[in-house]
Length: 472
Image (cartoon, rainbow, N blue to C red; front, side, top):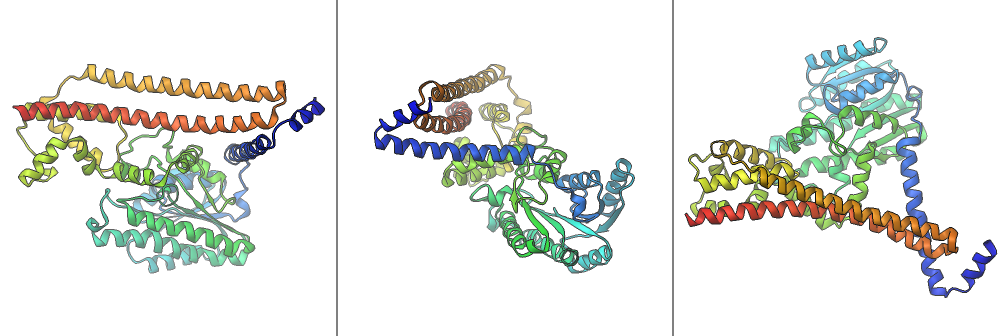
């Protein structure tokens, strides 16, 4: 079979062999990347964290990811130093952890990172003196109360973000680093954000994204500086995790496939400690990052701006109200608080409030739509038929997407069968690589078609209601 294959290759034109070789390299590159991702995410064993030291220090440890990290580290047999601003919460978390892991020693340090950080860091230095602190989790961080343009952000708000996210992380790292250098071992984990790394920009949360970009560069540089001391510095890059902070700024109330619980994220994150200088521990987040890299940056920028700017999004979907507000010199807040709406206005708002549960919303959009929904209660309409149309459209697009992807998978499999059957190795691998790429692009296209379909339905429904209102 091999001689026949070689003879067949010698009979092919040189341009076809060249293209086939390029296709083979492309296929090989993607295959290795996928296998590497599977190994790192699911198969690679976690490091023995006790080799770094018997104590771990966790900042921002009373809620969300920080609290989940503390529990996971206690499960690994490490003693804990937990730091947060609320002393009562620290005691509560300490009791909860010790109830599940009675042999874990826990020290608590109340520290408000938006206050006097220097005094707080001196307190940390005193508490860790003589302790074998091998792991530091720099989790503390804050962001805007809601999406807003930079010129609208109060100076105290963005100064606090810089102080907590940037100055706090840096000073705590320096306080712990000296002991690690003496012992020649340690691991530092800085919690970054997809806002600074996965997407090219993060408008309306600009200062937060900028501080997380600093965390990423700090981590990479420190890892290079102190690697020869046996200290591993890592920046972990989560996307959305179901925490209190995320629920406030992104209106995410529950977990999903791509939005894990804090405990699930921390379980995956602990497995990655000590490996790459930058990683996305949770498997679904790394998939999202992969898909984001396939899209052009201007599209990602527009998408980020649209989902964060709720009022701008509302004005696009509700041109009738927006035009009337501009004519009468009134703001959107005037219409949110307006009483005695006409039936046509309430019809428009009711239709939109019925549709919007099917459309992803972030930040101000949820606040605006929830207030509009409450405003429309006296005029609420039964739109079950319309909801069925939306649901049918959703599932129809899903079926089409699945069918199209299935066809691509069958084509991919058929081309691989051709390797054995016809020995067209280079050409089939070239085709397989393109089938694989087309499958990914088809999935992305189907997702965007779904969103555009729902947005179009919302637009035409409200536009019809606005025309009816204007005629009254």
